[in-house]
Length: 49
Image 1 (tube, rainbow, N blue to C red):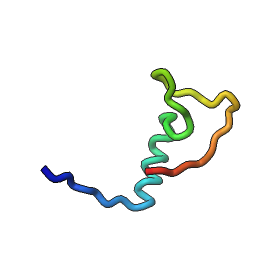
Image 2: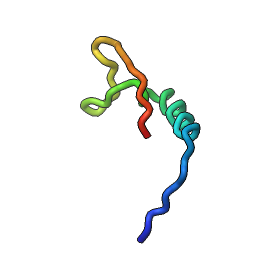
Image 3: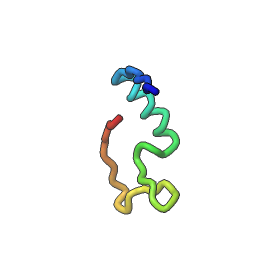
Image 4: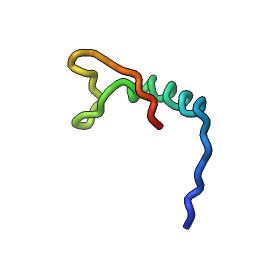
């Protein structure tokens, strides 16, 4: 069975990141079953589909 590939634009990915950011996914690590902030509080931008 073939898998259908969807073509997403860069803007599509940015929109997805914005939606997830409100849920704490974008800037927090998932450790031991929960989202955690860095001990230092530092963050960095990383857009990786």
